[in-house]
Image (cartoon, rainbow, N blue to C red; front, side, top):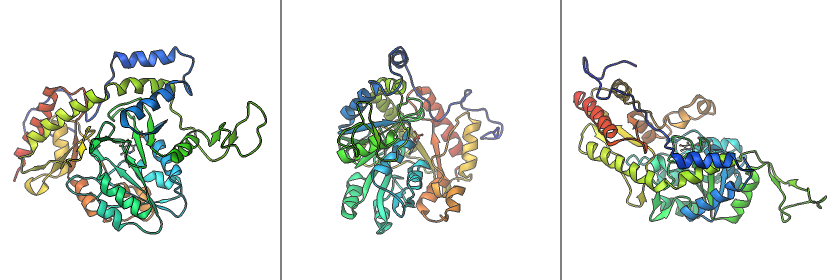
Length: 397
Ligand SMILES: *Cc1c(COP(=O)(O)O)cnc(C)c1O
């Protein structure tokens, strides 16, 4: 990709910058080493320690950590009782897993459109898509900004739906002063390296419901239990356990849990730096006619995971693809989040047609995810701003 942004120009940056990067320090390395030297690499004491810490930070009653954010969504869908013939409403502007979790359990994902200013799922569109088959909503805190939880909760209560919040982007975010994880029926997190905190791979489901908690614990580990209150047959002896349901091996290791416990100590530091970077970007772009800044709702105090640059294509003589390539020529390596889920061949073959969610489709045509991560220096941020402005100004019409 060596298309110079501007004929004959030199790049704003001489070294490539990427859209996301993890941040680990000595405390993280020590935490991992301590687990490696301990008796338990998995199923050990770091798992309840991490779960208690997640509960303490978020205010949720229960946390179930698991192997990744996708597994978290899968066991949440199982705990919600979703199955054959049921429908789950979600947004197309998300990672495929938010919708795939319905397919895993034999249910059908239904796509509601977005609010074209916040880019989050539109509660009115959710309500318009409810049928007798609807059982759950997976609402994604896109970019880390909380969805309209008050309205979504009301809608779900009114129609008897389970509200699952996909918080893969939003650990650390507050909604009306309450932590994400303590509000929806179940909230899932991902700890992939591009997310705010990481264990390489990792996930969690948070809930205030004991009923969901018990189901999540079973689904995470083979549907097997030693809990005497759950056993169906008479015990054979002290070694006895039963498989009482279908489940998976979705366990997190103690190595990963040790790392996450240490990463959680840096959550507030990560959040405030991410907010600073977002503010620098917003200040630079808010008054430009060629660009649109994502609207922030006052209820959300956002630990921002992604910064979305939206092009006002009417005011530019190039499209998103050319803009993206021009940024790469400036050594600003971006990404696009997300291709609407139902555009994928797998979904097209299931019968989903383009045109389902016009606002989401228009958003997809106009967005680029700029670099945003804790380790960016102010100079990095300024160089990204300079590159964006250089291209936008040059191609402004
Ligand atoms: C990353 C992500 C997931 C999946 O998490 P993994 O840990 O990668 O399995 C799900 N939903 C959203 C919105 C994500 O960004």
